[in-house]
Length: 69
Image (cartoon, rainbow, N blue to C red; front, side, top):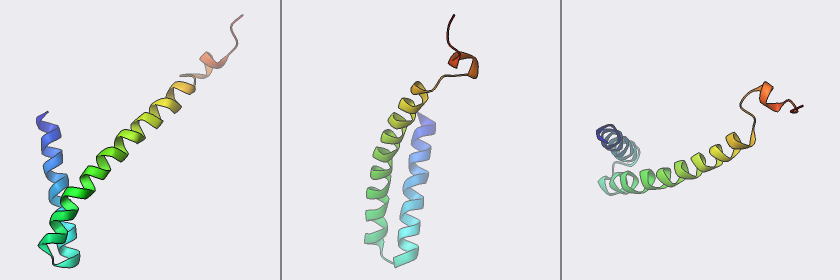
């Protein structure tokens, strides 16, 4: 859990820094630091669900794809 929290802190810091650097606005930087990670978290969750669906639809190895006799 500490690694997750550390990554979240880095993510928020990067989002704020990029927003502030591009606009010079603390408000825009703060908004980006809140909104972008939240949207990215939802997008990641959807990505993981889609990835799992594709992975389960494919055989693990070519041998698994052979018809069973």
